[in-house]
Image 1 (tube, rainbow, N blue to C red):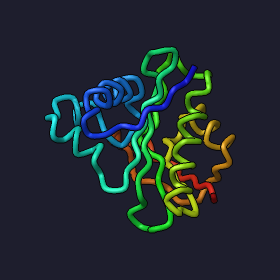
Image 2: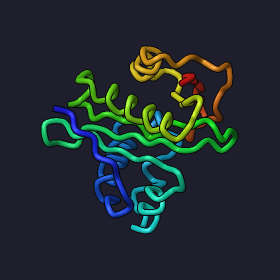
Image 3: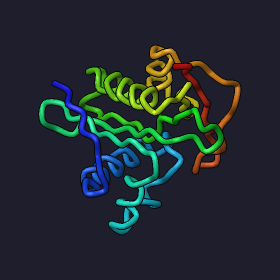
Length: 161
């Protein structure tokens, strides 16, 4: 059974555990690096979960942390939300966790009056890309900035709500 838990800044330890695992497991999939967060103080973790207008989730599968995702207001478009920081533990992949997290963020975005959700996926992350396409996201033609490795770039996808 998949349970979703909305996080508050007081849940920073749970967020930290999954975020560091994600940055270790998939170092080229995120705009941040493990080294950027490994020694971060508690106030930085709390601040991330307290971003204005944010929606932060952890998925729990059969009692174990299984993934995470966040929704944030777009910096550029007030009626668009962004799906960010999505990651599924290796043991939970292919078990519907990604689908549940995406649906929850889209539901949150609709309730906030958003007309679209946008996300970025690094080139070469074919499983994540396939998940997003399956949920109705389409390439925008925009390219994200270079990733920390200086090699990979992100593809920007959008779904109209």
